[in-house]
Length: 119
Length: 149
Image (cartoon, rainbow over all chains, first blue to last red; front, top):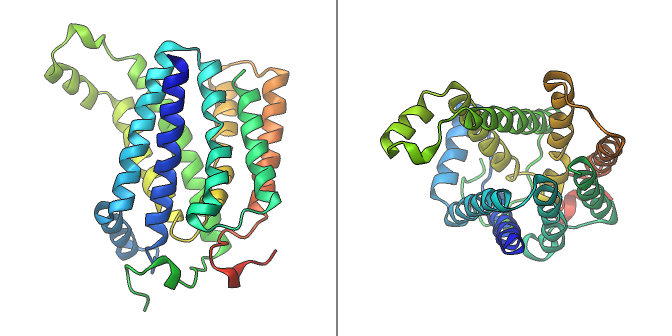
């Protein structure tokens, strides 16, 4: 059962972040004052990709809670850290990001570090 | 003036200052870490859900200072992270803000008195190295003109 919740959490978390990043990248932020914040909030509340991404992130969070209820935190946290690798692999294709070797090593280091921290 | 909603391919890339970039990273890391700690502490202090009606449980949640302040911080975290996606790559934002794991470990040591094992210290060093590696890359690579490596 824990592998099922883990897969659901990683898949929804990955697509959630990809969709929110895609949706937000279409917003041209103009300033960092109250007007800019209002514009960002309006974009978050009205852009279909951002809203769908937030829904997926919420489902991923609930799946992680379910995973924590059936497994130890020392399994749940490092296993779900694998999503960093999946997101990095898909960001080049879906978001058109230029994922350099340096970015890959960064994602691998973060994932390995999270595994060690939660052991 | 840039239109508010434009196709991604038409956006020439938004140049933000290094200070703004670092400020957002700091806000994301701090609000995520402290928000999670407060929410976790608050939920531990909540009564068992099964013994209460939904109304009573909701009332308890809304009057639990830890839950309310933790939720507010996590809303700020979400808005700050989504805002950063407007000018920075997903593969930049996620690793760089993973320093939240380091802050959580250090806060657990200094405020909760938890012991940090050798494995955890090595994990902290490796995450820091990963954060450093990615923070040296340009934050936006979707627009070719801004790639400088």
